[in-house]
Amino acid sequence: MVNVPATYGALLLGGLYASLLSGLVALQVIIYFKVYEGDRRRIKALVLFIWFLDVLHTALVWAGLWDYLIVSFGDTQQISNIYWSVSTTVAVTGILTFVVHCFFSHRIFMLSRRNWYLVIPILLLALCRLMTTAEMILNNTFPSFKAHFKWVFTLGLVLSTAVDILITGCLFFLLKTSRTSDFNLNAVIDTLIRYAFETGALTTAGTIVAMIFWLAMNDNLVFMGLHFVIAKLYANSILVTLNTRKDLRRARSSTGPRENGFQIVDGRRVSRLTFTSKDSSNVMFPPIRSPKVTINIERSVHCEEDPM
Figure: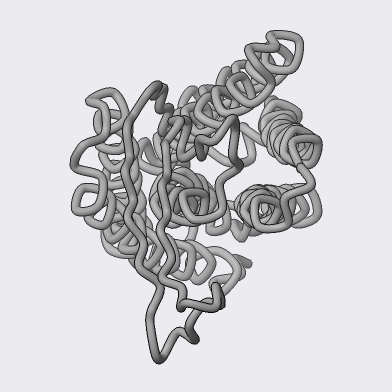
């Protein structure tokens, strides 16, 4: 007897939560194009590609729900079928995950001063994870897929979790070792570390939970409902990372380190000249009586900006 709540219900709830998170992805994309109009074209293309994959994934999720809940309504025997729309969601999730892993690998590459020894293992594992997503398309039923390719799907989830942990660990190590004696600058670095942990923890937790249900419950589709949500977590993680850059740059511009009379602001050396009003006794007036007069003269000497 088919457990309807754990099969049809799990797919429906997974589709609903995936749609909700897809709305957050769309909101992040809108914010990005409003705030970062001057970004490089390749970064804008990356955001549009992520959005395209997210919309495609959502459309496939609802196409699968239509097949299970409408086309096959009342026929519980059809629940064991793997419709092309559902199997394709797995492939789209794999592609989206690979793109996100490459994005964060690039960040590690730049933070580590182009250290290939850190990046190559992550990219190889990410590529292997991508290659494990095609087997479901070749099978027509879940029993057949579980009998012959259960280890492949499990391996894909394990690899995805491993890559997330490696990326989070590398970012934590590189950011931690970049701390200085400047308390304010360290606060910015701590914020970056927190973002790395939050984005990495969400995707890792989602993958691990889906893997647990996949291994522990062979008679339902709870794992598939959870798998619908995983793609949205990855899409949101990369967009949140891109959209927090302005706040971090603002913090760095006000607390940036100084070098030979210049202040380092977002990769640029900026000269800063400050004049302060004082009375005849050489004592600075309180801010209310005589506010500080500050003249900022900024001259860009070098700029090498990498939004990723």
